[in-house]
Image 1 (cartoon, rainbow, N blue to C red):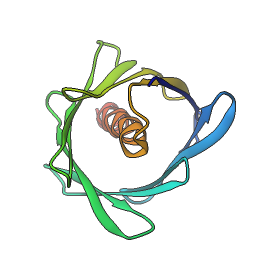
Image 2: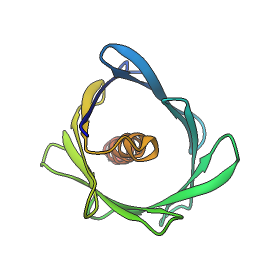
Image 3: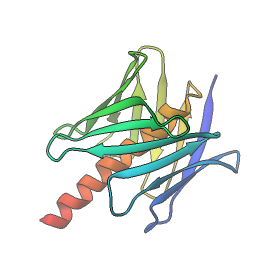
Length: 154
């Protein structure tokens, strides 16, 4: 199975709109004033809640049941992350090029490749797992925001 999705986001917008063949199938809305986000993809709804200061971790909830379904652990020094689902599955996320315009989310049998910028991009996946598809986009935004904050602070 091969899934191909696109996304668009205005330069100053905090919402990614996700499309399949030109039809909107979801979104990822980031909160401006807190470390929360809401994601919807193909009628599945997720909430992302990031906690911590130096060692941050994101908890992902199924919005309909309000139950934890996965966590994200970040490696800020290497711009890498690990997603752990409650089903004991683990996935690695990382940028694939110097410019941070290509990244992937993988394990031994799932491959999701992303390509894009802060305003548009595409997802090419071997799975239709909504949580994983939207999580890869969420993590890239996390690292882009951290990089922008570091630049602004200097």
